[in-house]
Length: 238
Image (cartoon, rainbow, N blue to C red; front, side, top):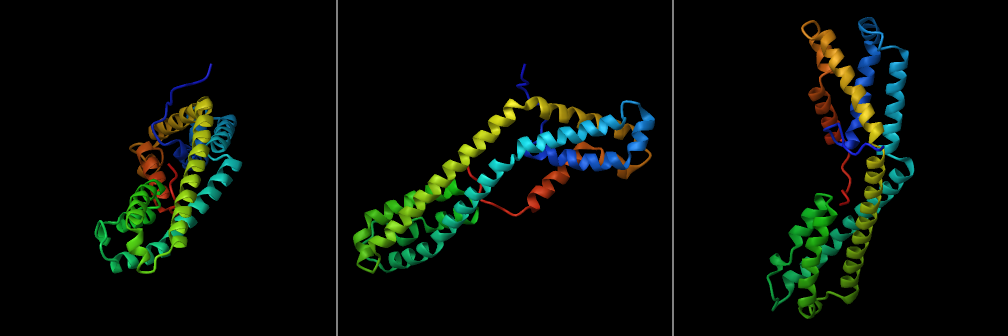
């Protein structure tokens, strides 16, 4: 029977990182654990390492990760390619007369915010509004030099961002389904993590503050968050 409930309260992607930090502390202090209980034998570390490998394969499957990386690269390139088109279009809007809305209300700022935030959903929503204003005022823009080819290039990038985002979402859904179908492995890893943490705190609390911290889940989760926040930003499909 498959597990259908997660025992862990952290992000799935953070679980192998958390276990990796804890594995290093456990290996350092393995002699103390073995002295404390025969449960912590050589086989215990082997099981932790095997569960960690399986969790990493679930969370970051090689082929899917490669495909997601390619999608994110294409997404980033498409969003960056909007920038010079926006600059030129904004110039035409500022020159044009008789617009249905002011140039400042076309939505240039919202599109740029979406690009800067690497957020394709926000970028697409803002770009949709922008193109509505472009279409409604095309004659006035065209009178100042804006071309049909320029508008077509903007639409083509809108389509490229949409398709890349949809592809990325399908890949993420596939990974989530794989995780859901293999919760038994992730729950088993979490059981080992909590066992080591609980035992580590019993061994070192009141005697070694540094080691006690190394086996405190809240501290480990904070380390994982810090590592995630300092990682290079990428467009977030979704």
